[in-house]
Length: 402
Image (cartoon, rainbow, N blue to C red; front, top):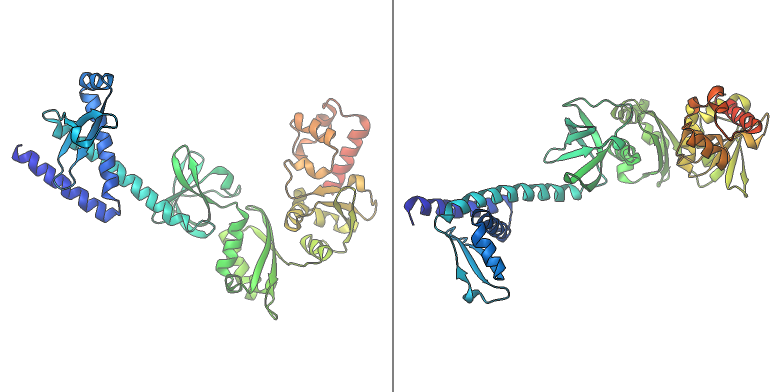
């Protein structure tokens, strides 16, 4: 063995020990990966010899001496004893092996560091963290969290936000998911729990547990409703979250790019809770339809637009917050058939019109799923919609747009 080769092996062995110590990687893990790479290198560079051995049913194994870095290849019978192995290391194989080992070590380090980072962040799933926009990867936003990177896919982004490079923002650590690019940290700006986490950060009473967030309903970037409850006598849950001169809630609003936030007091009294959730509308009357499971909310005509909200937003958020199917009707007509329906889980905007299943499906098939799609010309062109059905749809639209 020449001096240069011996020196390289000695340096290699020292490098393995140092890397494993610094990176917290088990030497056995690195050596096992190197053994696999050595066998693959042998099969690639000596294909005829390798194929012959395999045809004879022989098993090729590799061994790396962790003390001196010496590479050796052996062949033996499957299930045979170690003492019966025959060495087949080709002359000059040391240089090939060293190159293969180098690649394996680099790959092992990358994987170990990635796994270590993921393990660290696994303990922080469900928390709000601050990161920096590092780059765009297609429609995904890559966020630098400090030690690791996270991905914010389109469905987790706020539809009203534009993410600029190097801008700082708070994100909700949602999960570590298996993707086409391997395991990745997934973060969100659209998740309801981001809002809860921000209040926990900004409001000491929430972080201490004297104020509890009972529910959150969001239309990310536009508007949210939050219900809160006190666990201690004398603590005002709404006032605690608003803060003196609104400083606490304003901090959350600023973090969410001026998303409007309604804070209401939670109540075990369902009627009271629903009325609070439908604010700023007032003078509401609550009744229940046992047959449909709907909560009927009768609203003064001058409060109807407030109860429904622009694009049905207010009633939709209230329904989601209270986990109730709400039907809003005017106190003038008291016509349940033309009420606006909301559950907070509508698939399409037209679902709030309270249409029967057949009519709703006809509109979906015609790709008329938004309120603005329902013009007279487009409705008249939908096959299967009779005159009475068209009248009903137009009556629903009149209430919705009131």
